[in-house]
Length: 194
Image 1 (cartoon, rainbow, N blue to C red):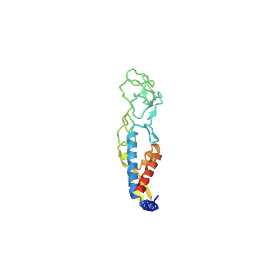
Image 2: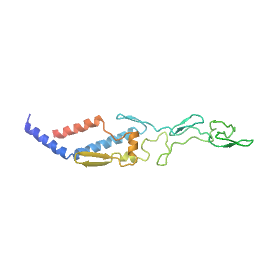
Image 3: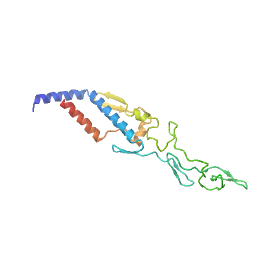
Image 4: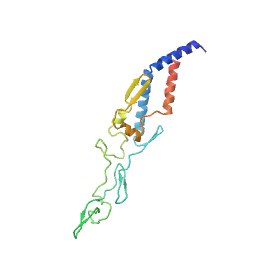
């Protein structure tokens, strides 16, 4: 073992660790690519890199017939919650009435009422069966960990969206795994060997 070469390598490592800008740039690029892969893979929900993203939550459960309306809608409407005039005077309060048979129960619509539409997204579009999670306008996916600050020996990655923290709690998208740590350690070892 040549101690002179080892001393030079340690000196080079020490110098790189004092100014780890190139390593941090490479780590940031790797993290951005992993985050982009995550958004592509989990756009319909599922599990990837040890994290599970649930599909959109149901909109509500109707009190009249107990049917749960999913986020994308598609359930037949009923005409509930309207006051309907009785023939002899007065009103059926909160009763549903079929427009053809004039039944005043919580009966399903005959088809003339249509179906419940999907939940409204912030962009103004509706959730459909093909909607992508966290990709309403694609802004969050594009901005995830986009701001990089290197201050001394600290790398800070920030997602500059006001709602990113809330989304991170519900569906984590910016994090490091053990595999990431092994990759970064391998890069450091490669730096020393050069």
